[in-house]
Length: 227
Image (tube, rainbow, N blue to C red; front, side, top):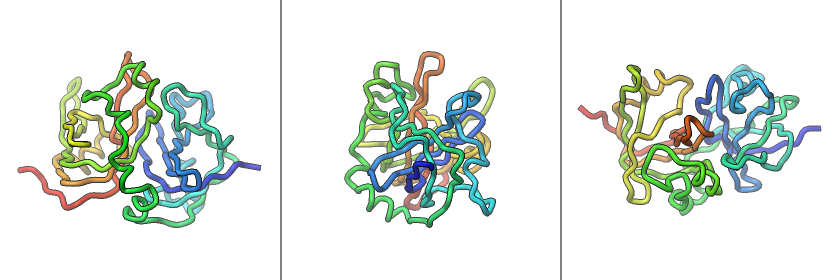
């Protein structure tokens, strides 16, 4: 019989050739990054069918879901400490939805500005030592002056963002909100939000660095497009 956890979806973001699914488990007041235990998944990414309800619709941010996991305990990962193995024998089910306001009420308004671990420095990446020392590799946060823009990297357009968190300015943070890089550009590039509720994560090592990602966009105050 599967172990079942329930919670609020706070991220359904891009990860390799699949999906990174994160829920806020309300019973234990913790984040769970649901990953596949299958050896053929490069970084534990889930596939679309694993994030699809029986009616054919996909999981969305702020859905309340139940999902089967191999164990209630986190996977032994020195950097991504919120990882939990998915149990594919139990079909993901939708139990309802919450509003941004309801999520914040459950999580605690004060906690939206309480973590510095992902932002141990002002740069888009971290080194191994910082990643290991971080007690959390995922966070829900309130940021100010969030601006999405396009940069050229190896001749290709990439979506990046800048913002202030706890009065510190951060620049050139990678964006992995949508299913593709082009969709991130289409939906977000050029937009500027005075206040936004977002989620951040950092990944595993890539060419000696641990990249930080803005992986979820949950709500905002009115935005404007820069002319």
